[in-house]
Image 1 (cartoon, rainbow, N blue to C red):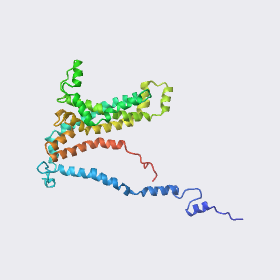
Image 2 (cartoon, helix red, strand yellow):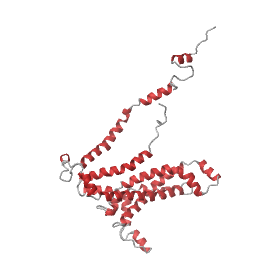
Image 3 (spheres, helix red, strand yellow):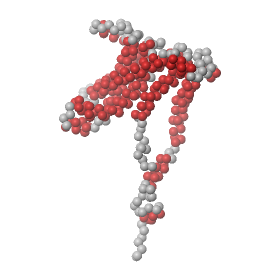
Image 4 (cartoon, one colour):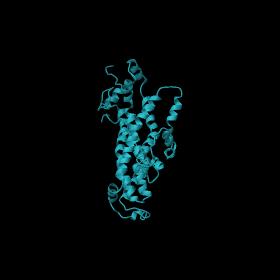
Length: 330
């Protein structure tokens, strides 16, 4: 026969305007194109329950707080707070100029930074000490987590008892010939808060750093050993690069947690707290539920939200997920 039978695959390719064995015009396989169309037509209504929950839990309270911050709201106008006098930005002006807000911001930020920075090497040292196998490692790891898993109320009550005049800490230091004075009042209360926060939060760094150490390939350790790397050289050039991400993330989360700390200083010092430990959440609580200046406390809460938004933005950037959209051909 002089005529050649056309294969079904070639005929199908010619109908699509492309040679046999080659993708359609445009250089993309039909399956890939179909998958892309399906990804673009994802049912976004599946996000509706989560969106509604976010609106009810986050957006609505935020709108109410902003509205309250513009009203002259106190114990006399709280019952009919929607009819309270509108005063605009006066609460914000009073919070910045006539209240101890700026002092509380300084106390909160310095306390959060010092506690996070001092806690970091403790967590790293504990993770390095328990990385390799040894007898009783599971027990040691469990003991390390006790300060972190205890509720803040229990930690505050325990340390408040130990820091009382004539308590355990005073008795131990007096036996060593050291007389420190009051721990829960005066300038030393600030350092007492930092010490207690370090004690209760260092296992968080320990967990994240230990997780980072587990991600180091065994071949990397073997290569460093074959090259004759000393302990410090191996730690600096082999292990620490793997810990950059976990350590950065731990610092940001610890700072956010410390600057929002309320239960620990509230239980440890009570209210009204000494001026040296009047952190921002405690000041907002006292202004609202002891002075009954609800509009002023709402303005303080909004200003604290703006303050927290800075490290929060850095945290969201640090944990941004790779969706695979970058680098995909259009």
